[in-house]
Amino acid sequence: MKRRINNLINTINEEAGIDIFRNTRQRDYVEARALLTYLLRNYFGMRLSEIQRLFKTNGYPIHHATLLHALKSFKDTYLPHNPFLQGVYTKASETLNNKTEFKIRHIQNKIQDIPEEKLDEVKQLIDDLAV
Image (cartoon, rainbow, N blue to C red):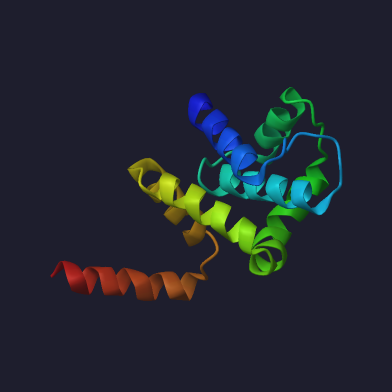
């Protein structure tokens, strides 16, 4: 898994033409770090403390609250307004979605956000299809 994470970091760096661990608050860097944080959390299932440790290991100490803000802002704020970021996100997520283990983890993460009554509806649909 470590190799896959390093490949993801390298892909983001190459596509963005930056080093996402450079200590700066420039928009390109902030949004690229948010992309990495989002993918690590949702596709790799990493805990925030693990993501924080990864950033620190790569020379960019990051606060827990900053990671939460990045996760919250990525889909609603950064992604819709940055076509370049959309391209990098699409490329990275397509690569990850081709792996069964990432598909399962991604679905599990999405299920956690679904209200109980909607889960009952989905279960019923699946049961109906199985018959």
